[in-house]
Length: 193
Image (tube, rainbow, N blue to C red):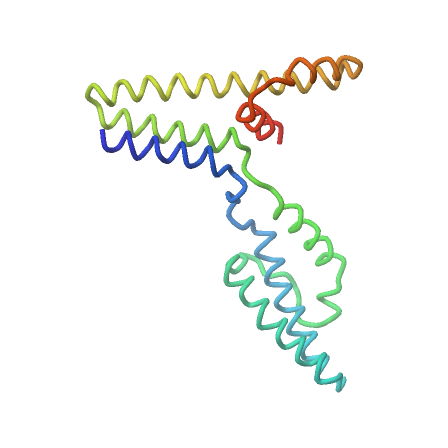
């Protein structure tokens, strides 16, 4: 019973919080980019000192180098280190493409339905382990909720496809859904993204 309450609380919290705070673990590309960023900041700080830049610029580049260490610490070291020993190495086309790839990776978030389905799988497993009357009921409830969640996703995807293929019907479609509750609108909006 206690496990069911904890699991239900987790689902409710996930529903209200959303999945915006979930992120994938740093990819190899992101780790390489963080390391190249640190090397870039270090080379810039060294160049600022060698070229007798203003105290302000030297201070900024030294601070940037220190700050970039946090990125490497957060992301972890890459398995393969890109060549980044000199300014020319850092400015190579391969490192520019690496930065672009890392940016693309960094904005990716898990799909809401992937997260929800994983949570359902976990809770179904916990309910199956709990056993007993409450475990069986919880198991049945969670399986039913997962089926309904998948059905809702298919409905929203179908509606979006309909609106794309029939733009002249989109206004009438939106009008028909105008009286949805705020909660329903919020769920549908999150499913669209």
